[in-house]
Image 1 (cartoon, rainbow, N blue to C red):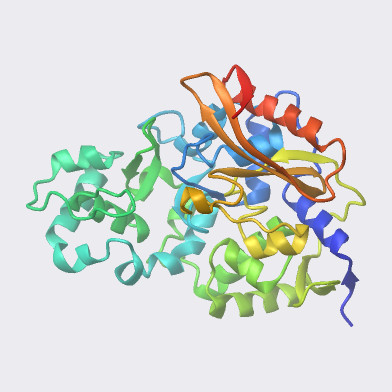
Image 2: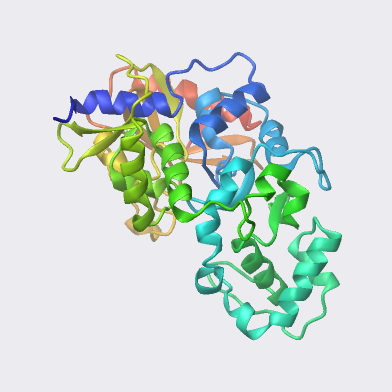
Length: 398
């Protein structure tokens, strides 16, 4: 017979797994950044810079004001041409994401689909010569940005893609196709948020390269599924099969056997959560706190809330990002951060870092029904910390 948990127990387990029961350090160091990496396993990347780049916010939410150069160093090594070991590498995981290097080989099942699924898959068919030239230039002269590779490769096509804000050259399409397939990797980003493309041997440690797609030691789909679901369940603490599969966007055909294996090994327990309409899977080693005293503003791309159905199930909080919604139809605003207080999401706030004016502009605030009386004061204090961390002088309301 399955054990039954209350919705509150499930919520607290999830918050603990994501690091919200750990007190913020007085002075965050690389050791604290690494602990967040170890817990989350996946940090989503997004180019939207309304407050700051999305990969920086999950660390602020858990650590408070920290030096973002720590995260840059974890991703980039010690400089543009550094061969220093990385704590994070960029790849397609949840979506465009940062993951620990040892996770990279387990995503080989997705890399193998490049010719069918990459954004620029047509280059393999229509421009194989340019594709091979681009690969050789990166291998011999990388790390290089797309603009730097473009200057080194002669080709006839200048512009190939113009939608959703993209303006890609043929070389950029080749780079993205090779990156999807794991034939090249990112050695980091520059200050303009451009990837630096490099050969995998430049970035990945030898033991990881031995497990790269196409190598004799590469994991098969079953091993990959088990390892990715193992990481996912640790990061969730508890979740449905759909929640756990979504974390690394694992195929359903891989997730089912992987979960069954983790249950067989005793690492995962199938349980029932009161009020949930489907079975849940509990990390057997998950912490089960009796209370949570967190306070954090969350990125729309934070792993605690990026799966919107799970957010609603855990917190009774209906949340959608409205960046692509026409302004007159927006309900809560353009770039809305949920506010976690205790163990509940008690408010949402539409904010913008107005760097020219030196202010954090609060365009709209909405308190949830049932928010405690102290919620407004706590939110003001957290917004003040956010502004200070961003190097802004003040918080202003529109």
